[in-house]
Amino acid sequence: EPEVTQTPSHQVTQMGQEVILRCVPISNHLYFYWYRQILGQKVEFLVSFYNNEISEKSEIFDDQFSVERPDGSNFTLKIRSTKLEDSAMYFCASSTDRGSNEKLFFGSGTQLSVL
Amino acid sequence: GENVEQHPSTLSVQEGDSAVIKCTYSDSASNYFPWYKQELGKRPQLIIDIRSNVGEKKDQRIAVTLNKTAKHFSLHITETQPEDSAVYFCAASKVNAGKSTFGDGTTLTVKP
Image (cartoon, rainbow over all chains, first blue to last red):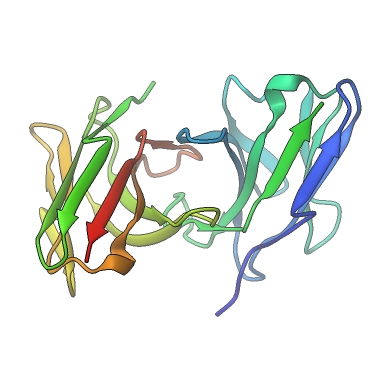
């Protein structure tokens, strides 16, 4: 079964540094997302991306965050200047259904630790 | 914006018993309600979903019911097994919206 893949699985960084989290969505999917989950808490929406542009973003997704689909397969999340509170598991997800965000397929996540 | 509340936060049942997890949502425009299972340290995985034009959906031992008027939906697991132990999240979203709003999760423990 096709899977969303994410790299790296763990990322440790110093506060103020830039990080790039990488994702390869399922190949025929049209919608791409980033969610995050602070340890023991709920999954929180960050951003959705369709047709090479952001379709929706949350309050968490401020100017420090950006997303990019640099080629036909990768989807990246960049945090320009990391803060301690950015420490979380970041999940990429993709879905195929047009006009909706149904049936999300999540990647295995990148655990980001900001020291 | 949408707010999803989920209860209970923890649920412990004996193997073979049924488990029910309930969620309420605030935005009457929400029309898609998935349930995800997340095992410890793993990714959330979709286990069942329901659209607002349907009142109930079943897939083997799991079922979801939706009451649009009351804005609540529930997950029912029958004949629970130890491998059902996980955190279960409900979510709500709207067609043409990029965002799914998740509940806080329910930790289900099935005792053998």
